[in-house]
Length: 183
Image 1 (cartoon, rainbow, N blue to C red):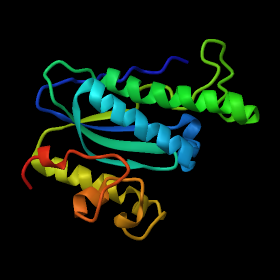
Image 2 (image 1 turned 120 degrees about the vertical axis):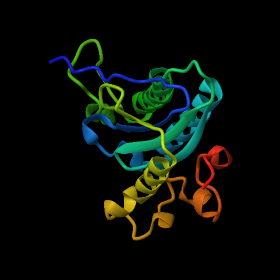
Image 3 (image 1 turned 90 degrees about the horizontal axis):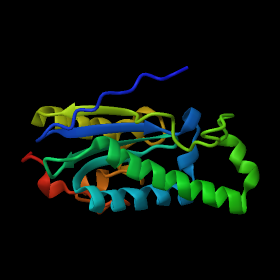
Image 4 (image 1 turned 30 degrees about the vertical axis):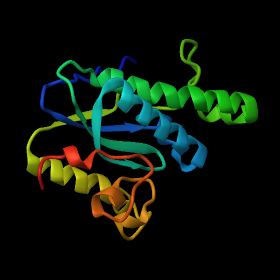
């Protein structure tokens, strides 16, 4: 079955709320190791693709990010590829070397792509234009762990940008709050 390709709009002056999930919605992001792979991949992608990171949350089986590309010519698909491919490669290398039995959780049964860390496709990409929508999106992202019942308060979830927003420290990935439209 061929999946429908998601159309991405690389519009100038447009923020993007990106959501992507682990293969079969499995909780691959509960391990410190895999979260660190993701954190490193985002930091490297920011440098390579020149975007501001305004908000994020790393959930056990999916990720939300609110980004704003700095330059006119950019590709959300390339940004996603940089992040997701890096995490996948590191996870596969680790499993092959240290836990070959763990590969069964990533097995697709397909010849051309025998293993997947991430769900097939690019995930969801929502263009966010208005300041009000941006603020709602930041709130939505930070409250994700609360809605799931993982914590009572957004500040209690270590794997998000909430601390950068609340002024109570920094999260695991530096955010570019100074570039966010005036609150």
